Length: 481
Ligand SMILES: NC(=O)c1ccc[n+]([C@@H]2O[C@H](COP(=O)([O-])OP(=O)(O)OC[C@H]3O[C@@H](n4cnc5c(N)ncnc54)[C@H](OP(=O)(O)O)[C@@H]3O)[C@@H](O)[C@H]2O)c1
Image 1 (cartoon, rainbow, N blue to C red):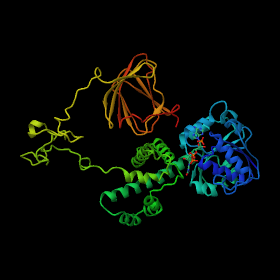
Image 2 (image 1 turned 90 degrees about the vertical axis):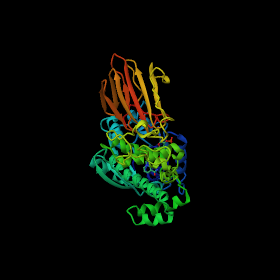
Image 3 (image 1 turned 30 degrees about the vertical axis):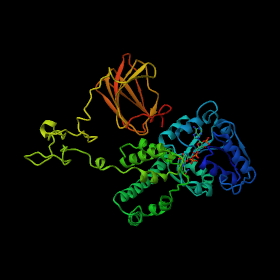
Image 4 (image 1 turned 45 degrees about the horizontal axis):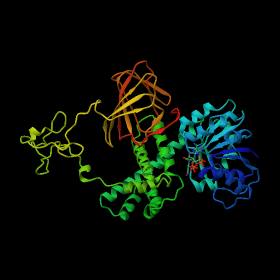
């Protein structure tokens, strides 16, 4: 029998640890919320059969609860991690009471959390020599965790993976996909496909609604497409509006952000799904099952006719019809720029391209730093809000020498930083770009970053964000995701 430390006893981890205990392995449990570990230990020690988180139920080996992650791993031959996200893995790894400080050479760490390849590489680098890391994130949910029928995407040295085969097989079917990090990569690929399909299903049903097709007809149509099986599987939940939590939507949103961060290129569909999930989480669905994304997409307000048909040409204010150029019959726009022609040329007020209101109602206002709302942040830094709408924020900022933002990311906002004066350094995980006056850099949503003024002179720059970053800022540690 093997002495196993199990760290992370959430919905998945509790069930999986229960299976190892049921097979007679000696378990040392640790969980951030200690009561979860105590409850599981009590259930396993008293037989545990029939309890939802006890997996196979019962134990032939010993079960005890440790006070710290370090204490849990100190005497273990194998350490399992089943944690929420990269931050959780760092939290249990670092510090004097953490895994890294206490793990002994010869131990194998098996990380089954979904954290992506970058955080997996970070964990491997932090482990002392002689400790082997296997990444084995899982496909399947609570029922599969309980019955030991998960699919495990396993990355790690072949010999180590083979040695741990019997333990892994208690949890499901191990599929070795390559060296350390390959399991984490495989899991992102799998979830990219799973989450994408749910997003496409939601949008397909929404389109059917918008086009006036009865839902019954929409299901029949989808049954004849490659979405057929997924539509069939999700139909009951959509019809009942009940999405009992198995895989929390907040976790799916985390995975979606990991996918777009890890990709070496623009993945437009994945970015769309990530944005839907971030919206759904912001709307309070984080604790629901991830398939509640379907309800969120279906409940999104239909666009108004004005939104659906953006005004791109001059409108005759009196008739509401597009005004035409008398000679050509074409809409009276500036042919070179594509912008609407002026009032003088059309004889009527020009609509604002975004709002459709006549410009006389939405007259452009000149803003300047001198009159813009001002705020102070960080260590003596200033910001002036030049534009402050939901869809667009433009801020001029000033940072004294030697100051830096804290590492953070925005889940929804895409940003563009443009240096006006001085020299900036933009840091993203594993990269650092120097920006001089006239240089800019775009930061997509989900990417951890830190702007710093490492020069001896003052830095002034513009931060342009769409949508606004208000209420959309997550502090991260050193941006190592
Ligand atoms: N649920 C599924 O269907 C499913 C399927 C496949 C893969 N996964 C993946 O499996 C992992 C676990 O999922 P789950 O459903 O079991 O999630 P969960 O029920 O939310 O459990 C998360 C675990 O992480 C711990 N944790 C969170 N933040 C922490 C921190 N900062 N420091 C220390 N511990 C922290 C939690 O401790 P507390 O108890 O103190 O909160 C809990 O033990 C995730 O990576 C998820 O993406 C889940």
